Image 1 (cartoon, rainbow, N blue to C red):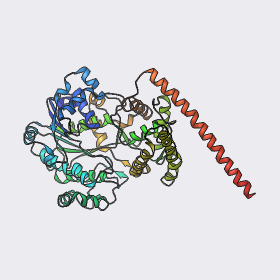
Image 2 (image 1 turned 90 degrees about the vertical axis):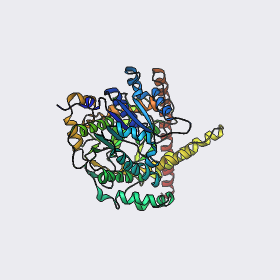
Image 3 (image 1 turned 180 degrees about the vertical axis):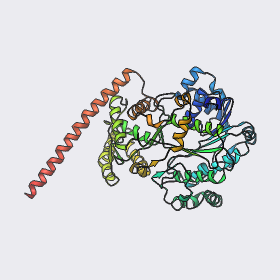
Image 4 (image 1 turned 30 degrees about the vertical axis):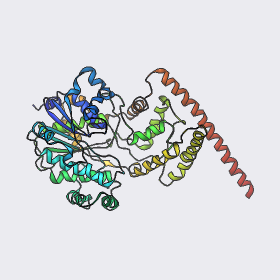
Length: 494
């Protein structure tokens, strides 16, 4: 009988890149809490004034590790930071640490990446593509390696709208080997100036370099026991270990937070377009399940690919997404808002006009008030960033992508009942109303830092009601003014 996921990881040593990131923390916590993993070597980039040990020791105060540390106070002692940087030659890993990894590691989870859509080409190529090649070269020296999971993205082939769990080398004008060789010959400035030519039909450097990284694996993985995991847009945790946990504003979370503050009021998106979001804990669970299957099953000729996205029978559109968010924001608003929270979805053609009335004019008004009271204006510049970010993700808010998930569903079905419960990634069973309510609660607690007590909520509800009355009074006044203006114009021509 095959061992389950906890048994597979028992006494094993894992090398994790991207461990200090959002998904990396969730995966680290899950490994420590549910398995007897022997050691997790976590690649950590040194920061000025903070040692790598200092960065990992700060996790003791991170909410994501609360449940773990209550049960296992010394659990984080099983995490050993490895100094490294994906921008550096040989990943910036010392010779001593390389020997350690080569001799001890049995499972590699490569999640380090730059996820900025508008990242400079030379940086995206170095972090997302060259570092993947260097990880493969390092893994080939690991004598005990049984599993290598490369974390990509469901949008790595977004030049298509129907994407299956397979490689798409035909989408690239030039293969990864050619592009990496080119990056070695040209200066950073020259590479960046060639961005539009290189990306071709890809919408940004992120998706393009993620496609190149997958091509590196297709071409260079050789006999490695390797697979690719493609998550859709990663959102806060659903249930495990905390409800709605997140530690930064990324992707749609920035939109949700901006809307909850009453800052973002209009977004470029179509109501009927499906939004592909997935909970972070489901992503971590599938990552571990992928490693398990690689380690206990016979190796396949082609690296398998697993995609996690909403299913065809349980998806959610942008219209429903925003509607549920607004409903839940009414129930648990933030303590600090500048206006009643609501969001309008408009087409790309109406978006520039809508931003004038819903963002720019109110922004100038509030900034003027700030200046008059001796404070620094913030909204005008903030809206410039908001509009730029909305434009950057335009393709994904106006296009429905359909993702094949045959391998993922098969993997889910092979798990024992115990493992399926402990490492759940069944998107069929996501209750979107419940999940988005938890996301709002999580934003309130972990991002906005609002106290979780009745007094804080009562204060926020009172503010929300006051802003709601002002909002509708303003809308009514504006409606009357417009009607009067139209009536006056009509009289002039009658």
